Amino acid sequence: MAQKTNSTETATAAVGSLYTVEELAAVAKDVFKASPDIVTAALRLEGVKKTTLKEAQRIVEAFRKKEV
Image (cartoon, rainbow, N blue to C red; front, side):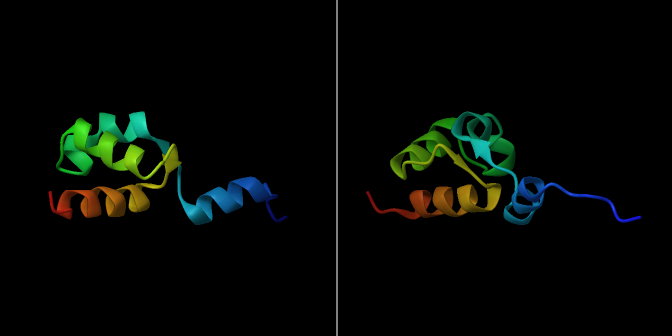
């Protein structure tokens, strides 16, 4: 018998897990090789409250490459 899946669970799995800015900042050094302040600033500048890890990596990388 086939297992039932919730459509919300399926959609979330397809998109990826969502993380808050605080959760991403907590793992900044390990995941982004950046300080928590950099990760927080990059995501807040983009107006992000929750995002996937892949998208957060893209945002942080673009932020780090910005000319000052």
